[in-house]
Amino acid sequence: MTEKIGLLCPSDTELAPFLPLIRDSRKSEAAMLEVWEGNIGGIPAAALYSGVCKVNAAIAAQTLISRFGATAVINAGVAGGIDPDVGLFDVVVTERCAYHDVAEDILTEFHPWMPSFWFESDSRLLAAARRAAGRAGCPVRFGNTATGEQFVTDGGRAALRKRFAPLSVDMETAAAAHVCYVNRVPFLAVRAITDTAEHDGAENFEQNCEKASGIAAEFVRLLLEELAED
Image (cartoon, rainbow, N blue to C red; front, top):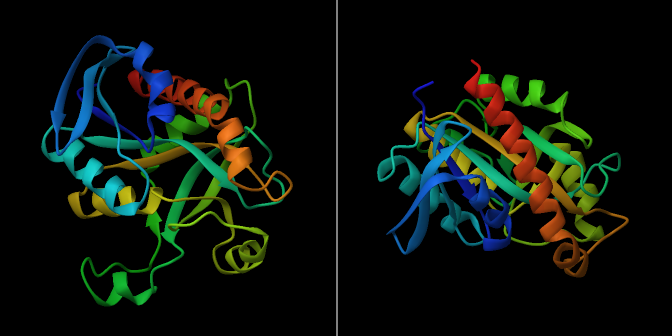
């Protein structure tokens, strides 16, 4: 395998469990971001945390591709659960994602003139994730993700479910997918759930973020093992 994986985490907490996995690690800086390069299970990797929100995620994704030679990007970390069947600390693997706070025709009527407002995840990365799911020690769910720059409260969940049928919601995934789409770079998002309709709010996010980040990182490690065998 000659690919180089870019690992994009929103926060330092979400990046932290990846750092011990990186062998022969070296740190550099670009676009005011600290980037750790090395290999994970023999696969070349560059890892960083972007900071929260869509623009930060886009800057980080483009930096991984343009400056560090990432030929695939995995967005890893935590998310809020929207679907009632998604529980705390489940892993959600994004099959496709969309912005929930951007008009749908922005992407279809203007650059990049997409056939729909959905960003589809890479089929090969998804296949590796499905194989990894059989070895994971937690529930792994595959489905839609919606991205927007706010915490979703009870009042907004019903509308999001009706419009996007998402398993999870976050603030970065669609933005990173957007950058990968225009660069024709394979993309996948892996997020573990910190809060749900039953465990709502920023307090639950803060309480569960560290544990969920470790779960997401462990699943990505299994995913990379599957890729290494391709």
